[in-house]
Length: 164
Image (cartoon, rainbow, N blue to C red; front, side, top):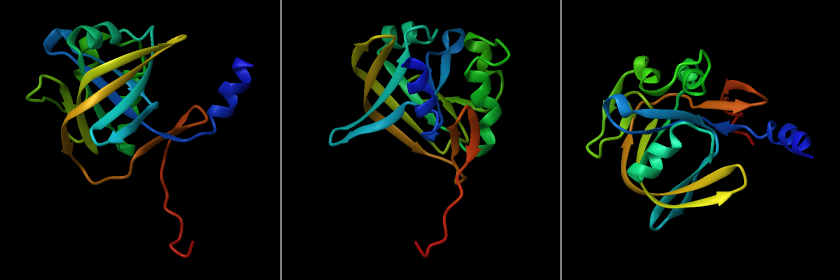
């Protein structure tokens, strides 16, 4: 059953984000596709993260995280933060133009948007934690096409003709 579910869910295209936390050598981040808005009032988002992700203890300790929504030209950065090339910890931030938010969260300067969250709650479910973040800051960034992920590959969004 797990492999069947994995195969089915690979067909669901999703946006790609880099979730970040920390400052200096304590900066951590990972690529995530399980990110969504939860409520608008109050503004909250959720992120599903595997317990094995190395950034998770830092998020739980700091009780905050940032979500950087990626554009299609960030595919290499998404791979880097997904662990391709075995680059770990603060070294992952060696590519891309990273700023530090007033709340002390790494923000990708040319992200489509960067959302800063205070960790409101974490819910344990099997191999993952569901992080519920209360949004405290939103930075609207570059105008570009979003990076998508489906069937094990990164891709792009193409709008359908407006006659639909």
